[in-house]
Image (tube, rainbow, N blue to C red; front, side):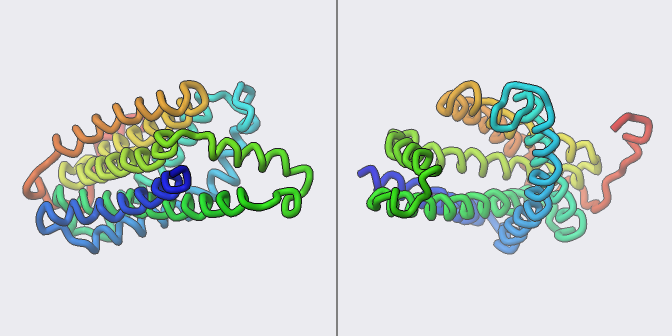
Length: 271
């Protein structure tokens, strides 16, 4: 039963990623190519996002005085920094693709499918990586670790394997639940970015970045202070806000068809 639950979790994650596209496609004439474009948009954003975090952001955060042992920086600053980094790279990527790549995708359903692809591929990739890790741990559990792991790493490896098997089934399945929350968020963020073009106002891009920063910051801060279950509860409440965003902006047709948002509203501001 323990093995079944631990294998089931990443499989559910993968299924969720695929099911998101199926569910959206059944709502009308949503195009599957937008799912693929959304998936490529996520991958493209990570090609820039991951190196930036590794080479620029993380070293900068480690120089900050604070109380987070793994980062060496103030927890709130770390959470906001990581959240903002994800928000800028992923939401700007969404904007660029809407602006230059899919100029005709201006309907609410287009945004849903684009967001389903963006969040769906993330769920599929993380599910695949998680499944690989689970199979590795299962394999290591049945072996004599002292014969394959150096002595200085043996204690840590044994502790990690013990913690893996000690997690209750409902704790294991939190991974799949988190992917569901992330999928809802990515769809809502795509709907927000679409408003840049439907309403001809770049402010909606900043709204999407703020939303992305917030959910990631909650996840980082909560995991270090509130514990996994309270953090997941907070993220579940946040997903209700994302659901609201999705349906508040629901329209049958594009409000306007303009591919270039006006920037003049911000010329006299500090943004």
